[in-house]
Length: 253
Length: 350
Ligand SMILES: Nc1ncnc2c1ncn2[C@@H]1O[C@H](COP(=O)(O)OP(=O)(O)OP(=O)(O)O)[C@@H](O)[C@H]1O
Ligand SMILES: [Mg+2]
Image 1 (tube, rainbow over the protein chains, first blue to last red):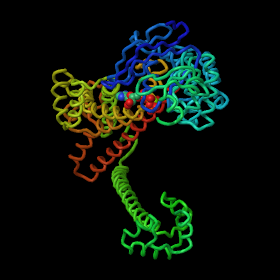
Image 2 (cartoon, each protein chain N blue to C red):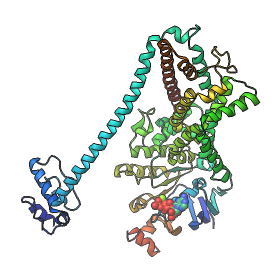
Image 3 (cartoon, rainbow over the protein chains, first blue to last red):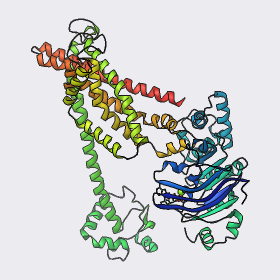
Image 4 (tube, chains in turn red, green):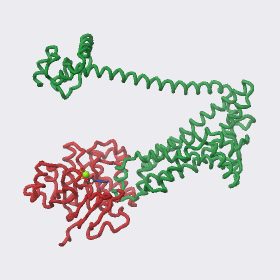
């Protein structure tokens, strides 16, 4: 199997929370500059899987992983320290989680911690990241104000900008719009459309419409396994498995 | 059923009507409904009843159905309970405030006559400048020793340690330290810091002793505030590729700062107010300490002697004046702690 174009290559991945088998024999290729959506009923392991890709599960005691996860052909679990990986693979969480700092500080935080000190470069980076996250016009006059004063939708775009500022290669999004209203959701979806020109995006979603609208590929998870994976159009129009079509049409899950 | 309810609105409800509301009412003593209706007549719908799932059609209308009567009654009972509790709370607050105010006023009123610039700042015989300086040194040195150790320990316990046997033992030790009467710290300090380490009776010996005493307070208060910092902040920071220490330094610690300030203020309170261990380790020398390696007398100890040796009314006034200074001292130290902390937060934000 050739994975030359693959960004992530996941082979025979198993994950255990202590003795609970949360992911079973996952094999998947995530292509560069594509949107992959992960769907499936609650508790099937979507968040767990997405957190494998930036080693967020390292924080959880008793979580063990077997199998290989390659990013550009390199095993991401080889390195002792996950911070290098995490600066290449950004993450946006379900609930917007801006730091209790100014808007400017929120964006500059990651690059600063990575060693960028030049004030002018930081300013440029902050501005361009906010532009890319389609929130610049709303915040340009209040960069010194606390990020907590923003609305939920604005906070989520700020978090996306914060991830973008690290100039990652992949952005992981775990239900980024589940806490947002339809208008804010639409903005984020449009944002994903434009971001995929530059990044690979993996997005977990409970909205079938959202998955159908914005993703190129879709993977359907059930009970810790990937039951079906393929181009979004095919999965939605012509699912191979009965479970998939049942889930998509809302008959269970 | 909703339509039937709508019709009912115009007439008194029939208690025997077969709606679920009526059934509930019927199950209760009929008198309750009676009383409620009577009270209702005298007080036309002051409040609008909340829309209930049982009969949404009635919402926004003066309730006349039995279920609504019951709810109204229950609500009134609840309101009465609420008001009673509220009254109790106000009362308790007033009592506490009044007692505090009374103590303060009593102290200041008795001491103010004797307060003067010379009393506080001159080198005159009965000036309390030496005691003020000793107290200040004691507070500063014990905090300088205990805060770094306490915060580091709290960080270790909360951020790094796993729940091993050693850690459980450490926690037990901290709990135990918190419960020991302060005189035992004094004895330990006298033996260890004054005798074995050779500090004699000195501010440094006292500060080291007291820093052990305030460690548990600092560790526990800091740890409590570390625990309240949401996981989302840490995850958000780590997901940007920062190291654990960067995350702690830039996200966790600044958020924990209010808790650390509280810890410091509690600790300062204990250091300033402590008598027994201070008596044993710092001593009672009345002269201005030239360094922290000399003995000295804290305001609290001084106050103790003043009161013990007071005979004339005049002596009591001096004691009260000293107490006034002690109160002012504590207020100033606490205020500056907060000030320093808020400066600190601002610096971290830029
Ligand atoms: N830290 C943990 N420790 C133990 N079990 C966990 C942990 N996190 C998740 N699990 C379990 O692993 C399974 C997968 O959880 P996961 O959060 O990945 O589901 P999900 O697909 O994201 O669900 P949802 O759509 O509700 O977010 C669940 O059964 C969950 O109970
Ligand atoms: Mg999830």
